[in-house]
Image (cartoon, rainbow, N blue to C red; front, side, top):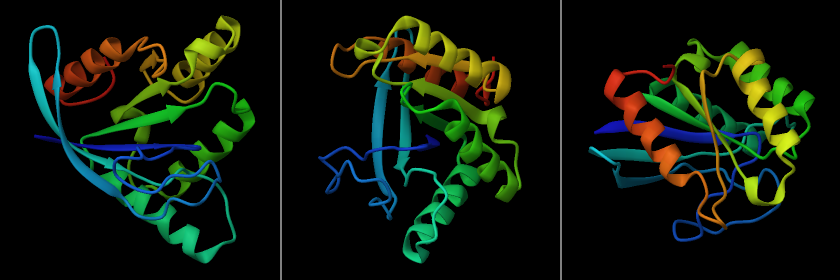
Length: 171
C-alpha cells in the first residue's frame, strides 16, 4: 500500500467524502480513503489523502490546512498535483515556489501532474500547461484528463501504478 497526497493550486474534494465548494480556501482537513486502482497488468491499493489546495493566504485557519497539505506531501510516496489548465501559469509557479520554499524535500521527484478539464480547454492551453509542468517545475510525468468525458483516466491510473512500482514519480 502506497501513500498518495492529492493537492494543487485549487483542488476540490470528492463530494462523497466531504462538503465541497467552488470557493477557494474552504478545504481545511485532509480527507483519507483507501482506493484500489486496476491497471492493464496490475492492481495497486493506495491510501489517498485529498488535501487543501495550495495558495497564499493571510487566513490563519486556512494556513493550518496548507501546512497539513505540506506535511502530507512530505510523508507521501507519491503526490498528484492537480492543475486546472485555466489557472494562470504565474499563479501555478508562485504556489509551487511557496511549497518548495517551505518543504524539506524536492516535490517534483515524486509528483505526477494531473491536468484536468481537457474536454473544455483548447489543446494549445493544455500543451502549454503540460510543457510548464515538465520543463519549468521538473515534473517528469503529467497526464491530461477529463472526469466528465472519462478521458485520460486510464492513463493517469497507469502512470500512478508505474510510479509506485518504480518507487518514484519521474520515469
